[in-house]
Amino acid sequence: KILALSTAAMIEAPVRMYVTENDDGTATLSYKTPIHVFAPYLEEGGSDLANLAQILDDRFAAIAAKALK
Image 1 (spheres, helix red, strand yellow):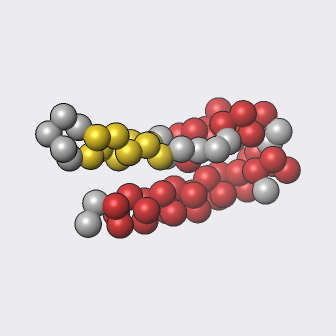
Image 2 (tube, rainbow, N blue to C red):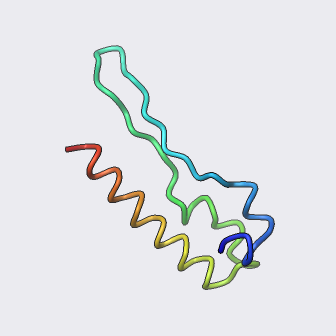
């Protein structure tokens, strides 16, 4: 769907989440929100791209919340 809205935005795919181990044995979850990643392409992709990015933001937030339990 994103490719259909902005060919240029696909340079960002896949949008990633990283889990890294800290020296103390804990882990850190890091990611950029999809709306941030796709922001440079919103002029081309318009509100449809913004809506898809928001859906992905919500999914990333849900994954992060589960990971932090």
